[in-house]
Image 1: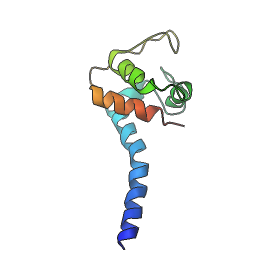
Image 2 (image 1 turned 45 degrees about the horizontal axis):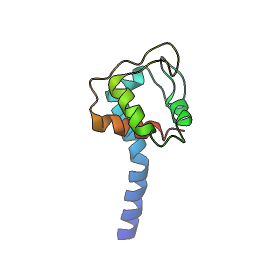
Image 3 (image 1 turned 180 degrees about the vertical axis):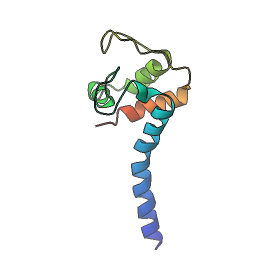
Image 4 (image 1 turned 30 degrees about the vertical axis):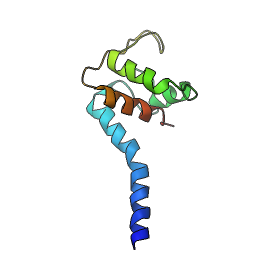
Length: 101
């Protein structure tokens, strides 16, 4: 019984981070301009993940862009700074974005 409980707990834990981080992105208004798999105002998270898949510094770079904003990488529309997001949340969001497929 204990082994079954552990297996179920591990399965739920493995599936939860993606949903939890999407919930964080929604709560911080990221999803107003970004979608998982299609361009809205900004690029899709799938496209961002593909672009930075091999970049070892991507989490830190994306976290900084989430907090400070940025422009020029994905076209002429700038990404505004997000004052609602602290450093830990920005890193969590950036790490999650890089897992989107």
